[in-house]
Length: 154
Image (cartoon, rainbow, N blue to C red):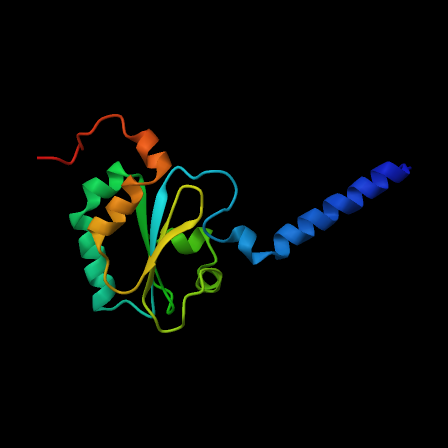
């Protein structure tokens, strides 16, 4: 027979588990606990269009500098396209539009720091120089830099 304490503990644990299972933000990106091992740029769009193509091309052009800053890029469209493809396996992509207050039919891009906070927000066109400068001014990034030379320099 369970003691009063054991019964109360089991009810509390059941409540916690139900809350976690029914809470969409818990399964959303990014997790808001602790630090992540990377920064993210998330590009939201209505569909895979010329603006998404341009964004993806620019990420390839800047890949070395993005890797140097521990930055990953994600594309999520309203009609279900995601890149990388694993994004939809791990995150509720529909809820991300709501969580990050992305207007339906718009192109919205976010820079998210290792702490999970939005550091920058912009539209269709990405100013990669500004993104890199914003990251380089972050206190955590300053700690990460061990030398002034970038591995991406020619």
